[in-house]
Length: 129
Image (cartoon, rainbow, N blue to C red; front, side, top):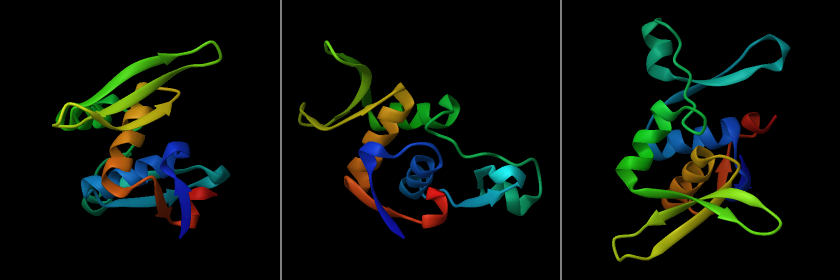
């Protein structure tokens, strides 16, 4: 296991962290040419079509999390950068978590993971290769 900052997580690492928060069991599968993806364990066990788990790039997986958890994606622009920020809307009416990202889904999933697991988390080293 290796520690990573949630604010820097993306791709398969971020998807694995979301799966951990959601209780979704995933399988890391590597193919030729060093291509690797996460698959839902359920799709692997049933032998049906493989279902990739990619909530940080697939709106049909990440969108329901944003809606359910009331994460508020917004644009942040300064003279130097224009990025998307996701703000975790707390019940007290204040924003507890703020994460940046190049897309709304990445920012929102970073925000979700940080709210559940903290801002530094351990991930399997095989996902970092």
